[in-house]
Length: 632
Image 1 (cartoon, helix red, strand yellow):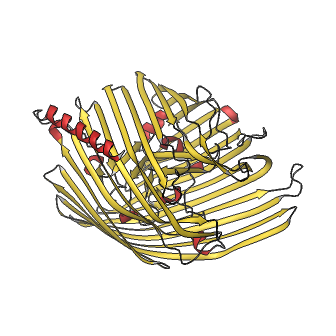
Image 2: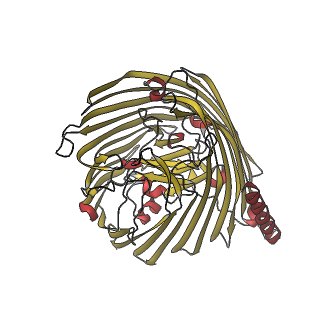
């Protein structure tokens, strides 16, 4: 496959260059502004990393209400959900584990410190108050340290401006689902603010294939961002977000349960101070805090009169960062910084059954890590961008871990072509559960990876047509996996993921845009020789947005998910199975009655496709929702 991709890239590049070498100088579309790839402001075309930026307007046009729904349409991203309405939702970037992707909200690390692999559950993350979502695929440990070996997903919320403005939103539809949102934004002299409150309630669907009881869901989100310009050259900012969710569950993927409930509370905030020391030196000091608490309660009922469960899980992390950006020349930007992070977790589990009571405690544990990073962004002759980076982390237990990366991009404006390539290493520290639980060991070492990707992007017809192809290859070693022989976590895992991402976009005129992408991911567990679970080999997305009237918009999204391997836990012993491919179609239409009053309707899974992301967990049938948006 690798040779085929290399040959295809070579043929396409030769044809493009030979056919366009005599073309006159053109203006190249640099894409959108992105921060996550380098921790500084750049256009997408100026960084070699594979990036996607989803704007607020794109989210609105799609009609999606959760971040994981939005991410389903992104190349290289596989979304796996244990049913809808609060079911655990994981993201796999280019085949990497869910815990190998770092998730940020306004720069705050929100991965769950108490989860087994420190992954983030996207089930409760709504799109309210979001300005844009930035996705960077490939290893980013040189800037972000642990958990970023697969990539980084950064959710950036809105910033207030102008006169005070209220905005409201209401939507209702299938499964007795109702959603309300109210926000206030504006600015006054040196101060700007944005505050938002949203609520979602739904009867939900039956999460598992057995039984018929619907599993309800509720979610309340409060978020804010405030900035104050102390002086002309300095700013103080504070962002905060609180989520309170309640989900009704069933017993695994096989048994209906009428009163199994999960509670999820997530609080995060970040305060930062940025200052321009002079024309070539900018510094930022920040402190962030994230606290996540999960509780599970399963009381006795007529179906299970002897079974009872009560458990809770607490985790928090604190992080201090001091970052400096130096610009000694117009073509050179040096970024360096220091981070100190501390995590603390604890948990409790109690159950009763026909076998008697069982109790387990995970006493409070904490750990710290220090990190130093250095990056140099070079822009040569306005068209060549080279960015090397280095980072050293000193972990409290396993000591020093160093990582490197080099990223490059080259633009040939007269033929509308951009070439890009990346090589880098990554690491993931063992979670506190893997270190200190009864199944772990303080002797564990971090996961490690070496990755590279390369490709091109081509713009044609004055940027009305664009397409690109990227090949990626990841080697993971020393991974922490479960050892069934000893019932312990050990550094025994090795895996490889490789494939390509193909994407294209066509805008024949301003009011019509069509886009498509296709991802091929080949995964292999090097120990067993088997495919990695729940990673589809083939994924495709197609999107059309048409402003068919001055005040009316239509958006159609089609998602294809190919076959993938999963485990059937309903059989004993459990067995490996192949899940069928599926295609879903969604449609959203909106109409602007006035400048400040809008109505919309959306249809999900129009053709009522029956499918499962995870074996045994149902996904929603055909759905319809209608709503209004108001600004005043």
